Length: 435
Image 1 (cartoon, helix red, strand yellow):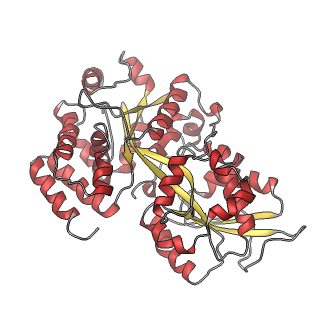
Image 2: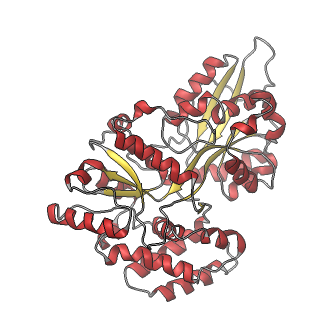
Image 3: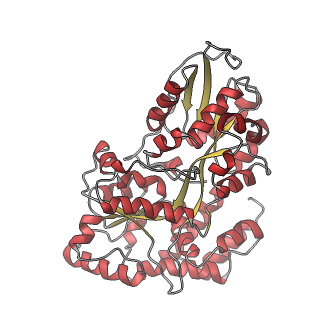
């Protein structure tokens, strides 16, 4: 899956390797009373900065357990972890990417149905999202071998609330309303964007088109799981629907020259009305987190991509964003289960949730409302949660193919291919056997 894997350079810097606390690499069994256990936790997300407060709270509550955390860049993590597990390197807890990676490492993961009852109570599944359990188990052959740290959805629109108010416009819900706002913006500020996104990045163009597809229902899932065609009337409507934003003058062609960092910068510098990206950019909603990252925007809200067709639904595709599992050969599984339970079902889920990197699988998850300085920001977060919880399709991307499909969307938008030519290329690629 693509994404924060390419996290915004403005909002989060992934550390290549970080140590939160503890040291030592020799294997040790679960502690006897009075002894201390060090859990080695390898992951690509979250960063040490993002999870530091949560880990410190866990260690305070469990003084006999220390967390030794190693964070890698996503691709390096995918390459190194399977090899490390195959040689039984001293790892107790790992981050689980909800992709082919989960399938690759599942045989090295402990069955959490055996460990969680003691760590979180016999009724732990009643506290946990059924949808997340189903999605996670689908990736690990039906067994519970990973739990969810965060869920995500895309593409969500983060809007400059002060600028929208200055234009005298409400949050646009349809493409027609969005066009009115774009025209008012162009009249008052000719150099500002009505909407920005990383149009130079093929996977982002694919995400935008698939968001339009999702407004019409779950056809993406029919394609992803049930063998439906890309070269179809449903995909054609999505390609053409996305292009309407350009045809109506809402999005401009120079958006196709923006990469992730530059699109983010245009919005955070006040040069765009709306910025489209996944829910992992929700820290933009918090004045506290904006100030921490040197962003001077007065107020930010969140919205769905405006609906293109009259019978469409405001929606995103949503899915597990990051998971966590326990290594089966670890001799410290009891302590590891306490840590996993704390992060996913306990107080740790609420503490980590303050980072606004996604929504929790904990049913009674509540975010710290002190993060929001305005009703617009709080309502924006509620919108993010609602969109993720009611996604019309899974954001279960096939990374390599997503780049190909996104490039065809780019070709159609810039006029070098017709929609039929682009769809035929996509269909040929998808059925080529590469995926």
